[in-house]
Length: 177
Image (cartoon, rainbow, N blue to C red; front, side, top):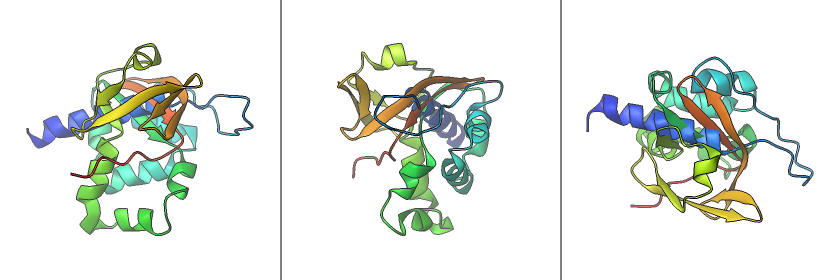
């Protein structure tokens, strides 16, 4: 698989990830912001929301910006900043080191699905193959989309010019090889 093809697939997965996760009121006291789609690619829409600064920094560190700015379409499960803050101390700093770019890329591409997968389709799936090549598990628990048994989609179908973003409340980690 060429580097361009892999990057395009990764971009698609990131787009899908952002589209599936939503920031809505679940009457659970959550104060997550609501993300609004609009003109611009997935990265531009996510950046303008203001709650994906860590994701944007990670995308830059992994050198995936051009991929997420490409035509797509992609579906991105986008973790909010608080999701990265919940990682064990030092994890994010370690992943952002240049020598760990491969591992960071594997994690980020695990958040992207090639193609535009809107919520109405996601709810009928039990898994989706990510750009990373590994499947992410999907189930409906108490009326909410849950990925890999623990990460909840908080807002869905945030549209961008090159795909869709689903907002999530956790960072997805690909299965160990």
